[in-house]
Length: 93
Image 1 (cartoon, rainbow, N blue to C red):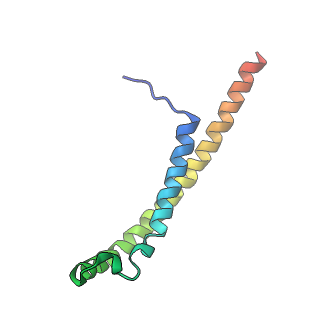
Image 2: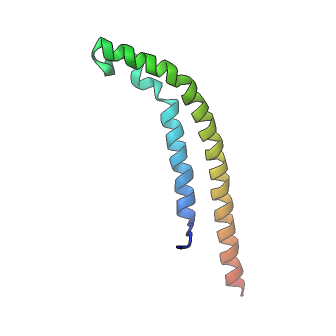
Image 3: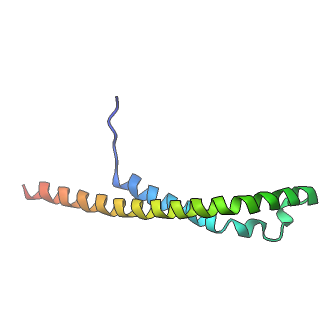
């Protein structure tokens, strides 16, 4: 079985990507506010129904993703601090 290799770049990027996903979720409503993006009235009605049903789930997902992103940002900061400490301890020897 392969070893798991975690780099500071991977941890930092994960936190940044989660922030981008959260931003997309928060601004999703702007995509369909006036409904013109859907074109035909039948499609517009179906998408309006979907958007209304999805709203509650999206809010819950956004909250959970925000919590995860905060934890990932903390992990990234701690990971980077630990890497610096370990590098410094090798330099001292």
